[in-house]
Length: 363
Ligand code: PEP
Ligand code: MN
Image 1 (cartoon, helix red, strand yellow):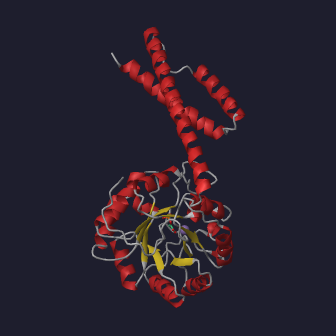
Image 2 (cartoon, helix red, strand yellow; image 1 turned 90 degrees about the horizontal axis):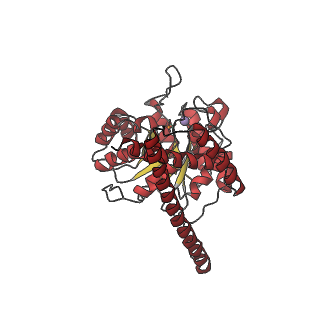
């Protein structure tokens, strides 16, 4: 476990099994009126616990709307106070922190483009020394769990004692159905290494559209996430940033009603027993799988030795092509998807190549 050495306060962020925290509000604060209108609409739904709005907007290219800046801080804080909602905004440097604290912002978050840069995160951490405010850290743009943890550690090191992590997906190299690929194994690894840090999902930035928000939120809840941050606008199509992914407060309420919050454990003894039996079965199967994989790698190594002796290359493309095709077909017959089989076979093949490379390089 990664040791993040602070006494954790539990306040804002729910513990596992409690109702999830819903953070909602526009991508950007655009006008005073806009943020007040949205806050008033959101406050009607008591499941919304925190009002968000971007004041300084990190944009991929210049000359887009880059946020209103400092004047909008007061709009956000006032809109929250008037509607009984604490407020949060993104900070990317020490000056932002200072201005946000001065205006009375209740919670800060660090954006994905900032988490990637340890200099910036350290600057923010230093600006927070001696200040008591919850901070949420979005994952870095690249799928690097240690960089994410590093940012949390820098803040914990500065004495921030209420921390959460926001999963907003990772920049794709190619066009995919997601704006940012969720790559769920990364937040799961964060949870494994830092179980004390609550995880919040940001389905808006993962999806980049409105249609996927509910499914991604449900998936996160089923993985024990503690809440979600969902971009909400009263007229989403007219939004000055991220128009395609924002939903109305009304749609948000409908989604919140449909989402199912499940518990990580059950108290029912009979079900517990059945579950534990099935888990034992899985344990036995996994142990066989590992045994089999070990054997397979042993054989791959022997093949490597023969190839070395005969002066053959490691890769015979035709053989690999045959294996790939036939195994995918076999997998299909057992209900294993093509995507799974491809990933699995590629992993196994890579490891075989690594083994044979070792053999070739040993003199
Ligand atoms: C945002 O929440 O508006 C934002 C800019 O997010 P991210 O840092 O995840 O891109
Ligand atoms: Mn946005």
